[in-house]
Length: 139
Image 1 (cartoon, one colour):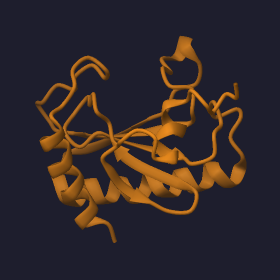
Image 2: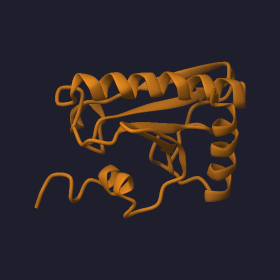
Image 3: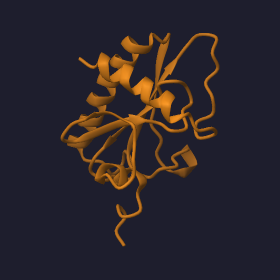
Image 4: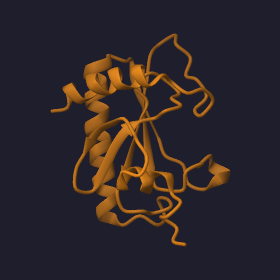
């Protein structure tokens, strides 16, 4: 069985499992993190499977980076956070839990503690509403 067959992000790209999508283009897909560290936490992935930063092609890396910047700008405009945290992990020891290259875009507010990613699911209704706000702010 291929590496992509069981990859959850590859399954999202193929439409085999649902995701609350925010933006999609030829090379990237952005969607809400279902266990967010903060309201508006989203993920930006390359559609082509690469396990991490060491494996991704330059073209896909550039596409994900530009999409992350675009989504960060939209989240900034839509949600008015005090900052935006960009995270990217490589290898289990570094905290990577899904082995498909992805970037976390996490809105941050002064005085509001960031939660631990992956600890508690958000409601689909809340994620859908936040995705709609961010999507409307895309320019």
